[in-house]
Structure formats: C-alpha cells, structure tokens
Image (cartoon, rainbow, N blue to C red; front, side, top):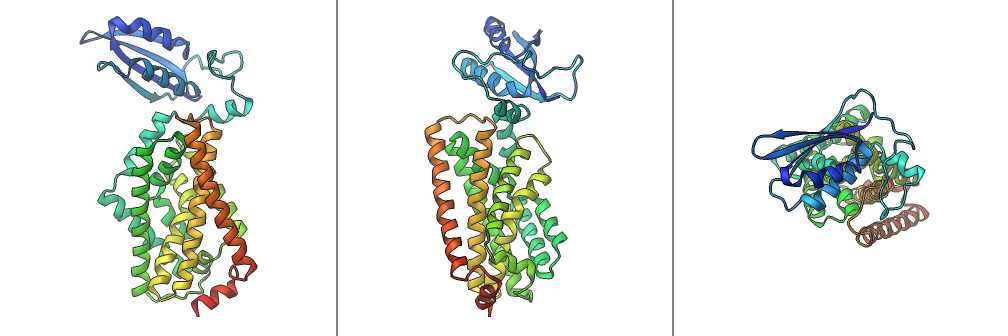
Length: 347
C-alpha cells in the first residue's frame, strides 16, 4: 500500500478550515490538543493524493507562522486503504478527471515536496561531493583502462551526479529557476572534477586508447541515444518512487560518468580528437537524460507552475537533441562514427 501520514499543527481557531480541507483528501483523520494553544490533526492519505493535500494546505495556511505540516511514509495500516474507482476521492470542479494512464503512473509517485527534500541534500558543493565525484571518475577510468566492466559499474553505484541531474530535470518540469541554477552549478562542478580526474589519469597512467571500454566512449550510435533516453526515463521513474539511490545512480551514471572520464583520459594521453568524440557522447547523453526525465515527470502528473515555461524549456531541450542527432547522423554518414574513424583520431 502506498500511503502517507500527514501531521498538521495549527492554532485552534483555524482547525475548522483545516478539517474542511482534509476531508477532501482523506477519509481517516483524527484530532488532538497539543501544548502551546495548538491543535494537531493527523490524517492518512493515499500517496497519489498527498500532492493535492499539501498544495491546498500551502495555499490557505502558508502565511500563518504557527502552521506546520509533516509527511511520513506509512508501512502498514489496518484495515487497508483500497485504491479502486469506488474509493477515489473527487478532484473538484476546477480540475479535469485523471485518465487511466495518469491514475496508473501517478498513484505511487512521491509528492513534489518529498522529491525536493530527497534532492536538496545532494545539491550542495561540499568536500564530500567533490571527493565522491573524483573517486567515482578514478574508479571508472581505471575500469575502462583495464577493460573491466564490473569496475565501471562499481563507479556508477557511487552515483555522485544523481542529485544534480535529477534536480535539473525536476526544476525544468516545475519551472523552478532557483532550483535549476543550484542544480546546474553543482552538476557543472561535478562534471569538471570528473574530467580533471580523467585528465590526471591520462597523464600519469599508461593507457591503450583502443581498449574497448574506452573506445566505446568515443562512438555515438542510435543505440547510445536509446540507452540515454531509457536511463533518463527509468531514473526518474525509480527516483519518484523512492527507489534506492544506488539503483537510480547506475541508470544515470551509465550515461554521464564514463564519457566525462574518457574526455579527460584521452586529453591527458594526447588524443584530443578522441577526447572531442567522448565530449560529443556526453552532450548527447546529457540532453537525452533531461528530455526523457522532464517528459517522464510530466507523464507522472508532476504539476508545473507554468505550462508555458515548462513547455518552452522542454522545447529547447528537444531542439538541442534534434541538432545533436543531426550531427550524429552526419558523423555516421561521413564515416566518423566507426571504429576505423576512432583509430584515425588516436593514431
């Protein structure tokens, strides 16, 4: 069962307003008096209704300094809450009824506030973040150098770029400029440290530029585009349901960390052409992850603050993707997307 218990604190004078709001989103709630002249109202809410409840609470009580709301995951409840058309709560006259697909994909999604809370801690540029990015890039680089796929996957599990990447997609979806700036800066710094770590490896560690794990990071094929799109969509689906960060990190890192490290390795080893090809793969992957991530957030029913802003951002990402795909097609047509071309770049 996907449900939340929401605990709301308000002055007694406003408890009537609160009960009117809660009744629209929950059929199980109870009230108790707490010290300090406040009332506490606790309610059990199906996860798909949490977003609506928090939005209504914010709109009515956000200006009240004594208002506080806590959301906690609920492991079990007896009798269980059924999710059927008969138990569905009305949306209200101002909202269209959800389609069957919206019901299916949004019923287990975390609320926007919970997503913000999960992402917030990973958007700070702390020493631990920089060290984690560096170690992840070093592990990925050494794994690619020796051709050990398992080691490369191990680097992905560290998942240093998970939070910033999800933060960029979430910010674009809801139209939050502040979150977008913070996530973009954190992601850019992380990418820079990954490239520098690869650069140091390329300078001081002998590499074979034709090692398959490295060489594959210089090729951009239609399958790579499909992989990046799948990574973005799967990462958002797992992240928005509170899945393991390591699981989501593998989905995202498979498209970002290895190409970044390969850029630095080839540059440090004196192969700027191959480094540029790895940078092109990273650009394609980054755009694909964001396009798929935004589309998946929207498909799950994440409410944008402005459809005009969100649609515009998605349009820009889509144009970038089309441009990169056109360049990829041109590279393949001209013979730059083959292993022979890679050999020419590094020889």
